[in-house]
Length: 261
Image (cartoon, rainbow, N blue to C red; front, side, top):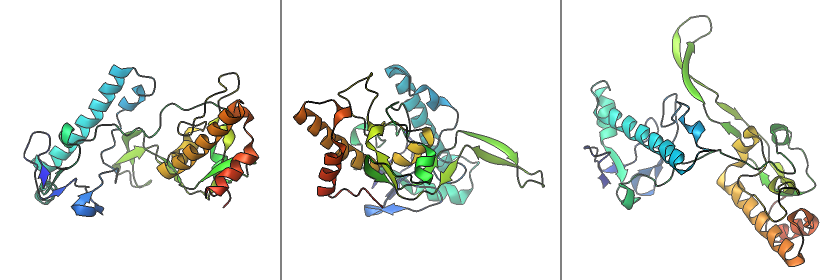
């Protein structure tokens, strides 16, 4: 059973409709995500205030994204401008009644794909991924494609010679990569900045490289490596920049970490 959407009648027997793709999870649930040229992505530039914003600014950005998602789903289910068969299908779906019960079925957090990142001893770049360049201080492997989302929704003539105007999402990029090594140095701040900090999530990487590294399994591997490195640094009483990387790699391998493709 599902609950109404945004204070209106949007209840049905199934939760979380994903327009255009029935990517079902157990119990008839579905993960709503970006799909197609028009989706739950907000492409009005409001997200750019988030990385350096204070608490009030970030709350405003989150509210903007929440209202957009609510409005889009309500529109698809209720507005007369939407074809009948689309409204009928969307109206069959609703929010999960057994999740986020204290926030009316809506997630508590905004999903931030990419915000502020460390500028560390080594900046992982696109060429490190595409070429899978070897790293002597590798502590984890990444493998997800470089995935950069759209930055704005505009229009252009498509196809090139027909001069037919069409909606165009600008900025999308998807590049396949082989398994690539992530160096310990990308987890380290510069020594002049800090000697007791390891950053496995907002690591030192370019925007493009982070578009691949950001996947949760990769971040788990980096978190494991950072924890092992921190333990060694504390045990030996040394700066994180002076960790014995060979010993760290050996301990990671003993724990089942894969460091070579």
